[in-house]
Amino acid sequence: MFNAKHLMRLLLAAAATFNAQAATAAPDPNKLLEQSDMARGGGLKGVQLYSSVTEIRDGQAGSELKLQIQAAAADSLISFTEPPRVRGNRMLMQGRNMWFASPDVRKPIAISPRQRMLGEASNGDIATTNYSRDYDAALAGEGTVDGRPVWVLDLKAKSTSVAYDRIRYFIDKESALGIKAEYFAVSGNVLKTARIEYDNHVRHNGQTVRFVSKMEIADALEPSKRTVLKYWDVKVNDISSSTLSLANLTRN
Image (cartoon, one colour):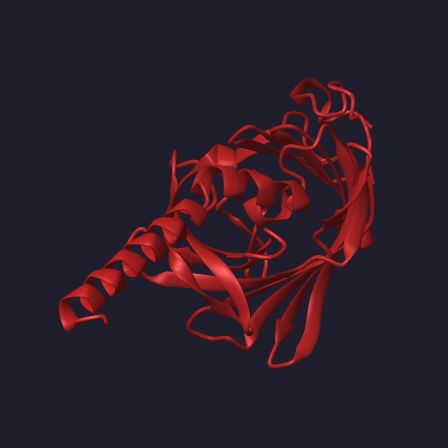
């Protein structure tokens, strides 16, 4: 027969085994981040897609931009296509540096990824995502988002030139996709939050993989202030280095 002490030893052993298995199951946060980046353009050899950026105020759609995005590795070219007043404007991101050009300027102008483009969306939000390059990741725990189990990552910026100092990133355990983000200021306050959807699909390394289709960014203090980014016609293609060249940014 089991006595109380023997039963306690068994329970402690079982708990130790469970904890060891849980620790083994915990992912490497930086590898998880790198994997999730791919569904938002990071790490792909080259990708071309189209995007709209729409400002929402109290449920009503306001200003809207339409863009073409071409990206490869750490570089992204964003070309403005609508409305007509901004057609021909371009932004180029190379690594963590960013420039703006338009038909009216002779030389590209250095800008910050932190500057707002429209509504709650910053310049850095528009470019393809490469969080694994720009942030150090730490596993902050587990949780749920809309009933879906997630890993919670705490991302700290490697440089002051990236869009945000710190991000809390929620990655769906089943799909390994980032489905929610909270963006922090230097003060530690949450600036805004984002929800991310993945209804696009692309072919990569012989497989069909999901790709971002929508991102909705809301002001943390005034949630009625929202900006919706939509993505479509996504293609994995080789993008020439000349397309992403600063020297060619002001050329038509």
